[in-house]
Image (cartoon, rainbow, N blue to C red; front, side, top):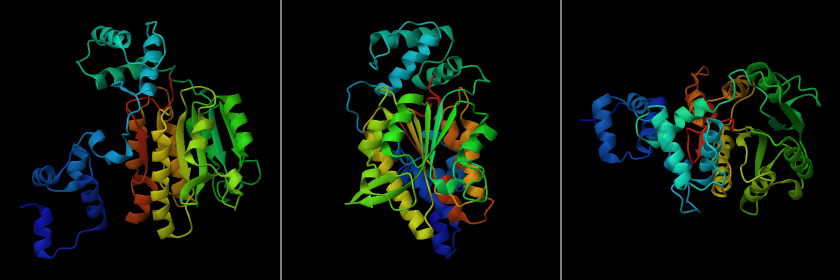
Length: 355
């Protein structure tokens, strides 16, 4: 008999963390009632079963995959990365986003040369490491957009008045040199920065507002005119203003004042990121949890900044955030800040920093 039913019959109350583990397990991709019972019987508890499952299974499937617009077996943004990476290791492919015979033949040659097992995922993991820039290269351009409240004017000396600003976290813990910070830019200023910098990563510290039933994003906590708010299509157009391949996006939503509003904010965040992701062109979107200032917010920024290194995958980044130990002794706050981080991508083995 599984622990689920024995606990119910014995009247045992489960802890908050156990309930969260069970919810994550039953909502995991490819895990139905029969598989759930078998995993609980085998491992004894949901936490151990989650640790044993492949990462691709242990996330809600609706937060990762999307309806394909193209008939290609691989999404165009994934194919473009594969083609660029293969060219870095000696191929001469046309970077057109089409997963055709030439690209498949080049992958087969790479697999044979590297003596890899047959399969798409092992080839991507090895290609990500082989095509990565030098280990010490921290010059990939990064654009951070944050409200004025996250520092005193433009000096970036403090984070929410008590800590460290996002840009400083990138410099201190990520060693970033190709970094630019914008404070509450207008849409035209943001568009100009995207065209000028052409960033590999865009980190948006932002708020979400519902307008006429649609979720809009803004760069300020203060009330702004609707003309300065962006729906998902507008943000998508600005992010891809330079090319058909967008940057890796960090969607860092500021936490509302109440716990209930924070939980509701996660739902709006998921809907906005889903709408943005379905428009295609972005290799990945990291939707962070809503963290409490000061410690949780700064720690979340540290995890992101230190993980943006050549060759590190999106999967490794989100796993690092989700595995952050709970120092608050508040399971719900930890869920909102760290476990609540969600990765939207067509392929989690892609690098955070584009090749």
